[in-house]
Length: 456
Image 1: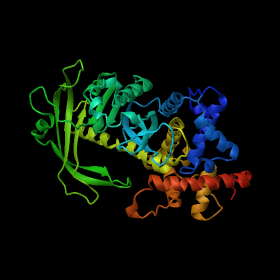
Image 2: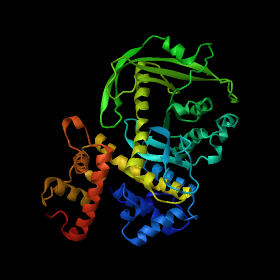
Image 3: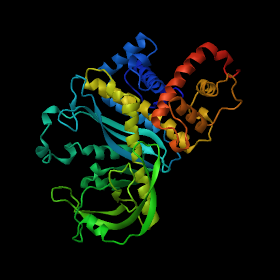
Image 4: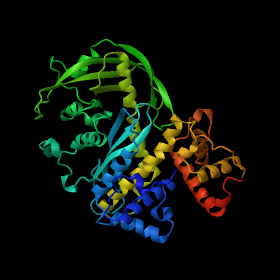
């Protein structure tokens, strides 16, 4: 991948020019050596020391790095984009074996780590564009086991308010000219959140977990189930390993609903109008399925015909990309193996590593959607040259660069992808492993043969 520079962060301000440059160096090092420790990513002991000092420096504020994420992420959005899907989700990053000061509890009472809230921008055709928004936080250990008390806390003070902050922050970042479809899983089925849909050029697409009461007197999903099936279709669902999509036949139902305010809510509005979409599997279970597909979606997107509902289903499938981002962050960059001794330092590192993780992810998905473009849109000349020589075992280079699809396929081979027909395209893991080999080889080749690059 091409090296990023300070110019790629339009509003970067860490209080010192050297800090700005160090941030960019860190991102480039992580991108080139994903999964390696900080000493292995660094060119010298000086760089290693500077990396640790960057994360421990109290003058570098967490909020500054959150702004850097937004700055870089928004700079990657083409000004001609008219509609964007925004996938939101939480990610628990575990540092259970690390005795770092300030870590909070996770899903279990024994887990220790940091939680991030992430929002990524996706094209309507399913190409991830950038990490637009990220916040990290810890759950105080003294609040562990006080779930009953949390029910008495105001909505604005709850952890679930991150959904609202994420959506409204992205809206502000992208402005009014871009149509934003915010997509989230069951945890975002929050009555107060539905009213974000009334912001300008904003819609919600949320998977439901509550059988809420309707104004007509019935329960939400009982009413939807009672409607006629409008279509039987085959949808493609990603398998857990992310390598293949499998066809599953489902029944489709939808209807407009008016949902009443829950009794426990203090929201000023008595009801909200949305469209409920139900997708229920009728084909046999595949071996990898734990249970049948049964999706219940709520959306403010206008649904006037079955194709509108199916478009929403397709968009919801792209929410899976935010989970793939979490996979690259944790398994690809090995963020959970960092040896920093304060939660604040680890939080800073998460934001830096997240930018690098998103760049790795973009390489894979861009190659799948635009395989015929020149690979130099992503790779440097040194990188594709050594890649070609390693794969073809020849010093003779082609007159024209390979396509991006060819290059990423070869990178996957270096990372262990077998390339059989049943394997599908290279996955995230084989690409990041192969890319690390390319970076190592390109650095050596550039040093010893830069004047003759491309001459064979």
